[in-house]
Length: 143
Image (cartoon, rainbow, N blue to C red; front, side, top):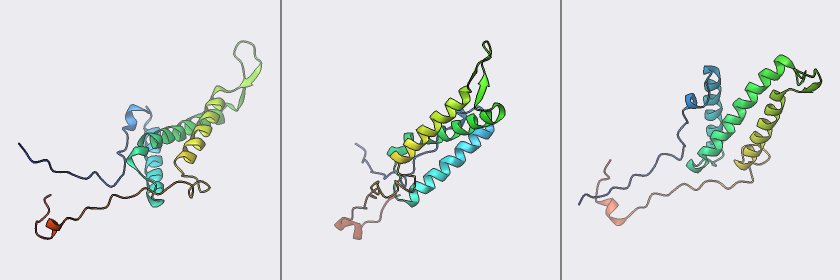
């Protein structure tokens, strides 16, 4: 039977998602990667980064990029537009999408304790301490 050697995981940084599977435009993928890196570095500096937050961070980045896409469309045609059939003024659907993305991003920022107001609320991630045994003084570590 082979010996099992425990290998500790990375430094608690979640792997970056493949933005190509989510966003079609290269500019959106670039923006998503920049938002991801900024969020990861912000959470790392605040000692609140954990691999368990990967999906929440991904949703936050998607909300940011969705907001940007929607904001571009709203700037083109305005928040209110005429309905195609009735010609009655109505909210631009992109305005609704932009508003929803902003609300989702705000909620996720609060959940992840990213915003300056919430930064002190969350607990810091405890780093796993290396266990030192008596044999560590005599045996060279593998790896």
